[in-house]
Length: 392
Figure 1 (cartoon, rainbow, N blue to C red):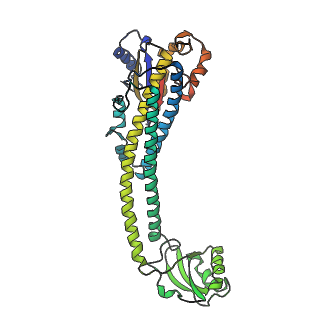
Figure 2 (figure 1 turned 90 degrees about the horizontal axis):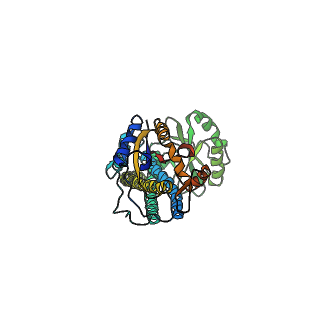
């Protein structure tokens, strides 16, 4: 069952107690059969203007979507390299060398990296730049790995494929080929085994100036027979096209002294390069996962703070928590919270110019949605700060 998280923030005024720990325990009691609830610490950031907060709410919503996209790309890149090996994949999806869920359960804002006394707009800009850097670094390294892997696969096909694709250097005796002739040249054609008799009976009449009885069987495998046929150069193009029309595969081959040894060395070189770049890609994937998840959680932290200010006003006094649940139980989390705290919907609407609650006016709901305020599944408005997320 897929793990899903809900990040929730509620004003202290929603509880009979003014103590945050007691408030957290009340929520834990309500959600005891839905998942594990832990406190989610949020610093006191610098609050600017109301207009600034509305813009930042919108910027953070877009940035969070980008965070999810980058984390998903890192996950897919690791999954591809590790061939969907679940145990190995989990060992690379670590944050600061700890399991991701451990990082979330013990989340603390990184005050050294992102000073909480800086303006929120500046913090958003820093997080945006870091996310772009992570995305570019991971993309570059995994593209390099995919290129090397494609090259290696091509070399393996040359060594291990059938006679229509594999290297002919270890197979063709140069003595079979007409060389240094002004008028004649030898062609190699891979013919499906079920067409062997047909080829032998037709090759002399496929085009003009095919040398009679020049057909020589060079080699065969489970699928193809390789033939050598000599024609006059003037009609080579016509002969090869006629072969293609019959679904027979002409093979381009030119004997090079020492070619077999060179191919072996090239395979060894690219194999070693693939192992090296694979290791580099996995290390970059581990770093990319850790960095992108950390950026994502810091962006979510800012989202909760900004929306709490927009919803609950000042002075800001609220409690935030992380609920570890599942895709099956997450809807129950929301239903339970709605039942307990739906009365907060009145706080979410009409405000005066200073952001103070003036009246309960549902007409403001669309305006709040435009400002990037919290919505539940399917864009359904919630009466409290509420976000859900999961890791790909």
